[in-house]
Amino acid sequence: MTSSDTVLKVVDLGVSYGGSPAISRLDFEIRRGEFVAILGPSGCGKSSMLNTLSGLMAPTRGRVVVDGDELYLPRSRDPRLGYVFQAHRLLPWRTVRQNLELVLSASEVPRETWEARIDEILEILHISQFKDAWPMRLSGGQRQRVSIARALLVDPSYILMDEPLSTLDEVTARSLRQELTGICQRTGATVVFVTHSIREAVYLADRILILTRGPSTIFEDYHVPIERPRDYDDARIREVEADIIRRIQVPWGLDMPQTTERRSA
Image (cartoon, rainbow, N blue to C red; front, top):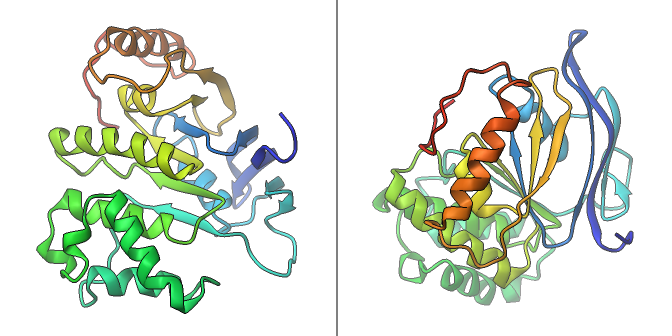
């Protein structure tokens, strides 16, 4: 891996609250265009990890390096990052277009390119017809597509996704997972995706960073051995899911049934 290939580098990262550690130590690198899932038990520090990777909270120890620059050191300009939350967080008094323009207004994207950029992203996400719609007139899946569009708009170094499909019904979530793989391949987006679903992680990710119980470290950097594109009903996905379940039972301290059903945290 060359330095130019590395978008995100995390070195000796530790996070504590009032002297109580939430993250013990994290070390990893993510290459440009990779889709990396973060999988860990509840309370292991996934939210703290995302807060540090987004620039919202400085770590207690260690470094976060984005495109060769340290995130928490003074710089001429901050890196462009995208964030997709569990809730869509769209402003209900603004149309889809106006919500997206709000993001662009805080970026360095030239004003004259906004319209074309919005049209392109909405077309990729198959929601062009809703450009002038109010968010609350959209379905949950459509609103989350707008959230993904918002994250992609500024051509970010990487996109953080915090269980973005967990509030959707399974049929809608499966459809969006399938679309998300195509979107990432088409745009070349680099994604850090937090999930509680092992099946979701296996279907979407190139690699899965499996965390220990908190205060967390990386138990395993798991490379998903299935080529793309993937079929959601491929028996190999179930086999990899079962393999991961076997691996995490002891370090997570869980008595997990041998099942491929989605489990909630």
